[in-house]
Image (cartoon, rainbow, N blue to C red; front, side):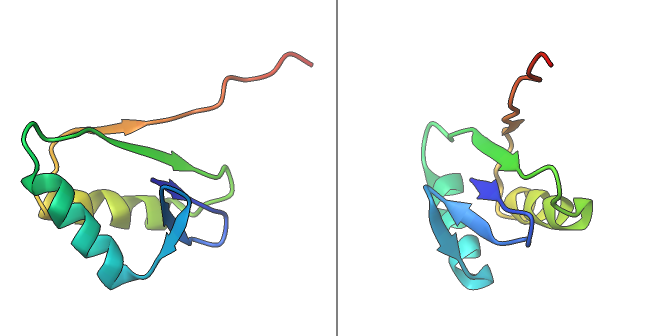
Length: 75
């Protein structure tokens, strides 16, 4: 899952509306074994949006959330 600078949430590169996100999170939480939600956010994404997505994942029962980062490039 990724979030761009405008706050749009993507699941496998597909832009989602809030209801679609809830549906995907619920489906993922029901799977056994439960997958880890890997979250990547643009550096300009507001923290509030990231926190909302994390809260939605937790509400739906996803217990494992990982953050994907890009390694800092040498200048």
